[in-house]
Image (cartoon, rainbow over all chains, first blue to last red):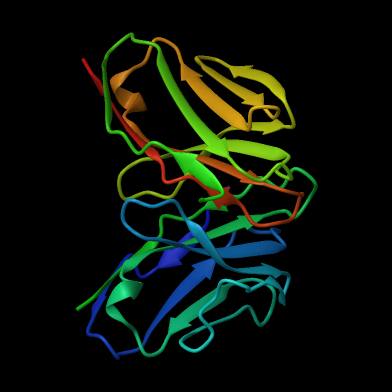
Length: 114
Length: 111
């Protein structure tokens, strides 16, 4: 079974530029999550999708971050404009959405904002 | 006070040692407790999953949850160099809700 795929793996941009990350979840997984992991911290949820609907985006900085999952499969996360404090690893995870709901994580995209 | 507290370490042990990792939490609504292992430059992978209080064992790993003390532990027996990683505790209130993670404890097992 293929795991969660993410691209790019690394990205370096200057502040005020825009950047987009892509995630393809495990086939059949209805729930998709984007987490932000700052160096030395645990992952923090940014947004949760159930199919193509948003379940939880309470911690998403909506003035600069946006995310979509138009067809209920893959998803993109965008930052515009980026700030220095956005430097982090952006992790995508997916799950079946059942009662146990094991979340499977992708390798992450490492973003450095200069 | 953070919802989940975890000592970041680092923790260094010799091969074969018993390792004890733990987290405390403040929200009594948490019911689902997990331990994830994260190797450098990789995503977290689920190690142990426990619902409510009690113990769970899987090979060399044992997870314990004490809801009365709001304290969870992960024990690793006969630790191996391949166990060197960051261990993250995570918890959530209900199925289908967001995971709340600790900071992670970095473990190094030397041969």
